[in-house]
Length: 123
Image (cartoon, rainbow, N blue to C red; front, side, top):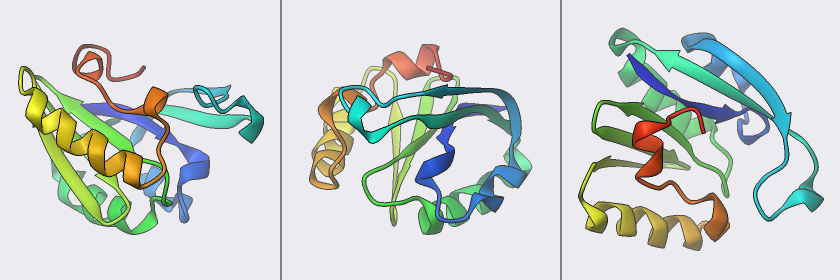
């Protein structure tokens, strides 16, 4: 089972949420960007059967400046607008490639995905 977090306001089309099982939802602000207001964070699970469709649709509906992640075991998939990265525990070069791209897309440094998410995918 894949696990992760989706920010509802990051989606152009919220029907993507229909593909996942939402485990928990909270309202919060973005790290270092409290001036942007409150967002809805959905912790979710996704089965392998829906993975390919989820990735395909997520690439199309994620807004620029946002990302979402899926984690299973020692692998994390990061989906940004029109770009998908797969990273593995213990490979800092893979994470650096994501960070470089994400910063160019306008994602704040404090919000970048880290290896920590491999252990805590709902953070």
